[in-house]
Length: 378
Image 1: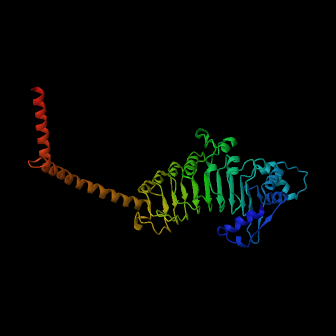
Image 2 (image 1 turned 180 degrees about the vertical axis):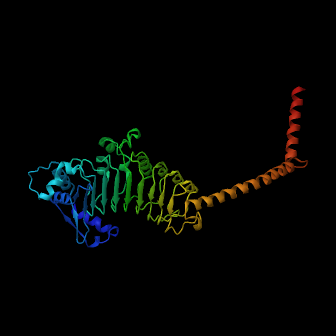
Image 3 (image 1 turned 90 degrees about the horizontal axis):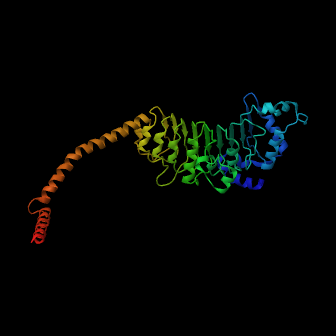
């Protein structure tokens, strides 16, 4: 297991500075228990497991991670342990922990930790090339209010967000009952950066955004950066509670560039949107429906031509540009109507005047009708 994870890390080393020289080092459950207690801050309510890879990156199997959390959950004060750790291991101290962070720790699946830490609301996982799924995180933490998933390149879908309320059997059998979906999602902040989400289907994105729209949080901050995306799904418009949106450096290389949907104009509460580095070529006119005080950043989109660069600085300037366009269309329509009316009358006149094709057609029809009528009555 460790060797396969090592190859995955080497294949994606560009995601992390310094990873080229780092090697996996296997650790035991006892080591993890001591790390958890050593890095516990009951005052701030967090456990921060941070390891910068100088030469080695810690790797822990799923079984050993689970064993470590189970040992904490069943802590006995008679266990041999450094005195400074005993207080942090107590149930009362662990109940004050709301946030847990794993940075540079390599594991394939998130363990069940709710017995050890009953009040976890914030999970932060960064720089993990072994992690492949977030299902075990989402399903066991229905009260999760913030989730940071950064530089986990083997995570390829966010679909578990949409099936959070399904039972295990339903999820296994693929029976997605929309009436039971999204009931438990409580996210307020979601950061997803440096993952590989390019193969998510249109339906999966639709369900994910519906789930986020139904979050009881409600969702206020969303980051979808460096995920190799080529478009933003239209259901983003349903997440009307959003105030901050970071959508950066997806660098879509298709002929249409990165596609922003018209539905983005429905995000009336948005105060900040960073759309930098996505190769956007065109913004929908509906972007002018955003809050005029919303700060929009469009740097590093060299092919963005609509609206013109001089109007890309703010929503107010975009509104002005689109208003000018609408007025041009309106004035053109007003001027065109009399011309169309006169052209229609001229066409009718030419068609039905003596000698015109319409005149002869009407004459023949009239004569044929008279002939048939006379035969009938004779």
